[in-house]
Length: 41
Image 1: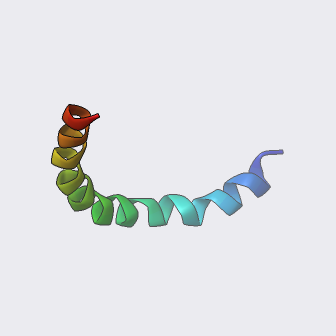
Image 2: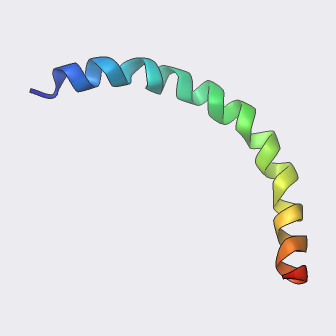
Image 3: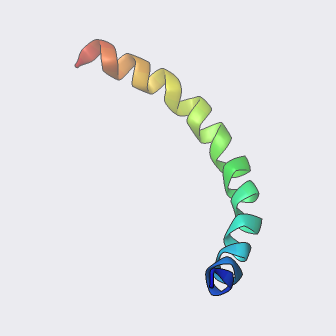
């Protein structure tokens, strides 16, 4: 029953580690910005 869904989802899970690896430096840059923003808001 869930096999079509899992078949669709498998490529996404394979891509996701790559996405997180790209995204981690961005979040590291973004954290100081959010801290500054919290102070100003």
